[in-house]
Image (cartoon, rainbow, N blue to C red; front, side, top):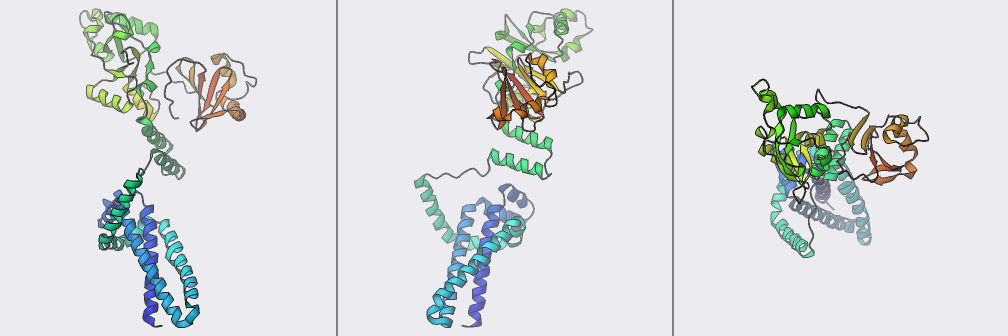
Length: 421
């Protein structure tokens, strides 16, 4: 045994530690973080390149790791055979197993997993050079890997899923990096592509519209009588299945004072309406509205009969929550969404609700939230939320237990998408 063999064995153990920790670091760093580092400096670009070609990087690491581990074991066996003769193999196996497991696997991987970004910025260039040097062998194994994937029909999973993003956002909120309002907007944005026009529309029965041959004066009287303050009004011929235009109140205001303005027909100042299918995704609805410069769209079914209408405000509220202007009536505790459908603050008492819902509660001193929580044993789950059926109504406790949906069972109204409070 000479000093050169001992030094070489130590270097091989260091190599084992390097490859093991590099594997952990490159797998731990996220693609998003790698993209960010690539904008900073050359080392960041190398990290991104290795992350983008992860298969090549992992193959190169495994080649290096096996090379140093096998080399170290062979060298150690030779050393101990020289020292211990017949016992050399057994002793060498035991000692190298402990050394490789401790200093070549466990400790390096723990070290790298604690701060993979810092590790890669410090040692990533060495790994990058090794991946480049081992490219001929990597290409062979990569070809073999791709061939087996094709034959076994193995598909690569997505780098990141919506569920993972949601969990990351929730973790960020718990750690104080993401505000609650930001979390709600992000999660609503993730759900945005799954929402269709019919989920947010104002249903046909609640549309305020007038015949196109009505005058501006008749429109003003009708709005006062109905107690509405809409900025855009659909007009039609015959019934709502024949909507012919949209009247903008702002343009009517500009006509006030002109001679005969009250007698102007609505059809003469209306804009061509935008029609969309009930199943149209919100993302497409938003694009059409921007392209056509329309704030309102009429939602129709397969037979082109009117099902409802949707506005730009409805879409924005799906992302950021309720938006109120100076003239909107805001109910902080109870909001009626549709017929037999309410969103109620958890602090509202049952005594307040008994007249609204026309049902009798045995414990009227409780709040609606307390009432539901007392009966969670009888509740069932829908999309992870507790739902309680009671005297013809469904009471749905939201995630943050602040707002509660109350929906009459058997209600035929088109279901509106719930907002996240």
